[in-house]
Length: 183
Image 1 (cartoon, one colour):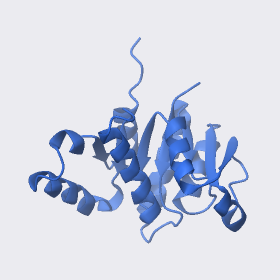
Image 2 (cartoon, helix red, strand yellow):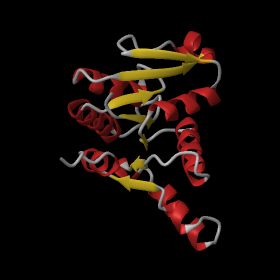
Image 3 (spheres, one colour):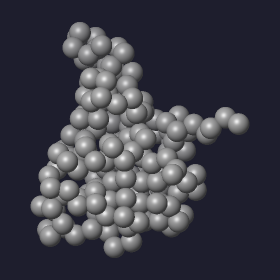
Image 4 (cartoon, rainbow, N blue to C red):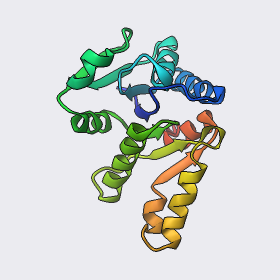
């Protein structure tokens, strides 16, 4: 079984075309490297863009969707596998179980919540998987500054701040999270 990344991202495309381009670039890079995608199962917004890009490279795409969204939103029709779960909480838990690391792309409350739960669980030692932001078009600049300010204010330990990596280039970020195995 190859490596997988959980990708947290928007169910919308956002107003800047660079968001979709970055999602597509990351998806193609993942698929070309044999890195599977674990995500929220949608076929729209940045979620759909990254799933389509991984699938275009014949990559493995696992969608995890809670029962409450399956009827309202449906799921991407081309998924390698769809897992239905009873709740949003179980969705996040299952995505982390299936993944070897997590990347957040631009998104809204759901993306932020998934990201911070993964960080909290890492802080508590519940997993040691890498977590990163794909900081497209400066989208996460304010969040990065806020986290740095939280360290300065004494509410976030520097070692916990270091749990979150960031970068603006999908290929370089992927290299940092899942380095090629040394022969």
